[in-house]
Length: 427
Image (cartoon, rainbow, N blue to C red; front, side):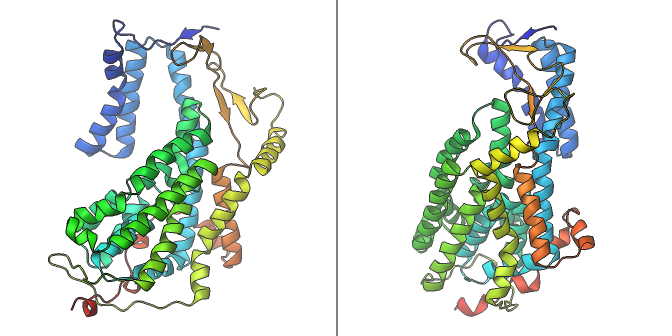
């Protein structure tokens, strides 16, 4: 078997110049998406084509290895990434289609009429919850629609939501970014989650305050300082703890739920002395719907079940037992790894590349192992949460089968019940 030795300085031994060329696919991706405004699939195809050219022409990677590496990456995109995306959207759609998500929006939408607190609560706290549960554009779509329904300019609402999503996005969609990075780099998942969590937690402390300063300036931000402190500290502290000791899957969900709970308590006992309105404010005057405690518990049930399932499936002893059991189910003719449970050796790529210092301490073969821990995966835990939720809410199998349907604009459009009267408190 032909062995290809990696090189990190193919252009005249210059690390800087080689790094610039290696970054071409990323630049192409950003250019296609942000400047030329092309569709995501077109941008991805252009970036992949440029990566092919760089790998072949600059780094001298054999064509066979380039093709197999591409297929390996595509397989990883299907599992676990697409699996998590599919099941998380299924759970979200289940909440939307059963009407529970409208109750969730009502429960978070009628707490205050101050524009600063509305933006902080919905764009940051609730947006982080949607980021952790669904991700992939849903936070801005859902939170932005809620703010627009409350009278914010749609464009302004989208900008506020993007700003509030600064740190939650690192652990979006059950921790997909961190999980992907861990698999690509080979670094331990929990250690990587911990480091990302430490960095994000420091920033999360200041994001709520920064969001309010951008909206209204430093002086008006000081008027809601108690809420800013409560929001930032509650979110950042739980983000730090969960990312360091639980892992990336529940970091956003646990942090946001804690932050939402704290903010609800704060806003029940405290409101700013002066209510802020935006220039040209046009608050909607529909009265909010009131929901019983049982209705609220039922509405939040899908995501409470998600927390339980992810914790159970992610428990080290349970996860290890699941992986050992599923590892024994693979047919003997498959190229199984002798060291990684549910790991399949990638034919033509496993040990066909030699990694060299400084990436490794000494020259070592690259182990191309495709892990398919299908039972213990976070996506499977999300699927189980969806099934249990459907069973408890008595959703028919036919209706449940339609849950993964694409998110329509109707599902993110604010309802009249999700907004309330602000005019009475502006006096």
